[in-house]
Length: 285
Ligand code: NI
Image (tube, rainbow, N blue to C red):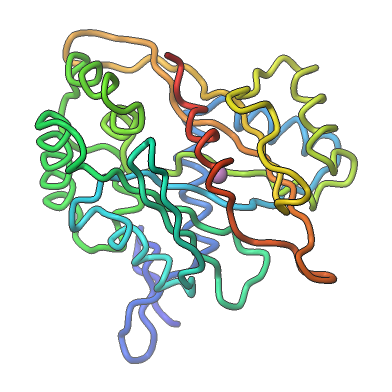
């Protein structure tokens, strides 16, 4: 691992095989995410000020199942950074597939959850929009490693199209506006000292005025399922569309408390029924 290219997160080893450093990836993704989500920065600052050391449990990406921008494509930089495929999920009602990845050696590295919309199950509008996004994105990036930082680069977005997508799939509409970025980061509650249970942390956040996603209850999952999760409702931010500015949901912050599935070993997977409700943290309808 010798050369870090200027303005790039891509290293080349002695045989010029491209590898990536996962810590640099998450630093850049956090910056892109927290820059547009004031609540994430504020909650991070609130807990840090109380002496907490924040560990990230996982991040999540959304995409469409178009080759070149699908789960397989988004996973490439993580595989090059030492991640391995650890789980498959299906969300029937939302017409999504997902996979999760874990770092093969760094046990405190965040897990990566990537989902994709099964576009063939939707209208021509959804399919054409997804195809347009794929074509524009692939024309813009130089290597597959850049896809996770590609953001939304498909020209001026239309509020009319956004509303059309929203009628069929909130997920499709979110992706059209926000694109390739971390949809959320997740505070790993087990590593907190003072707020080391989801109930205590949720109460603190509500006291501070944050609204939690209550779809399926504020706490998703149980100790028996080895994972409890909660999340803020996404921040509402002003976005410029071709037709003018509109306030729409952006990203959210998630909180995860994990339980042991063997002595000294925390469960590292995800619960599909809980994730299904967490997706609704960006749904304000
Ligand atoms: Ni999550």
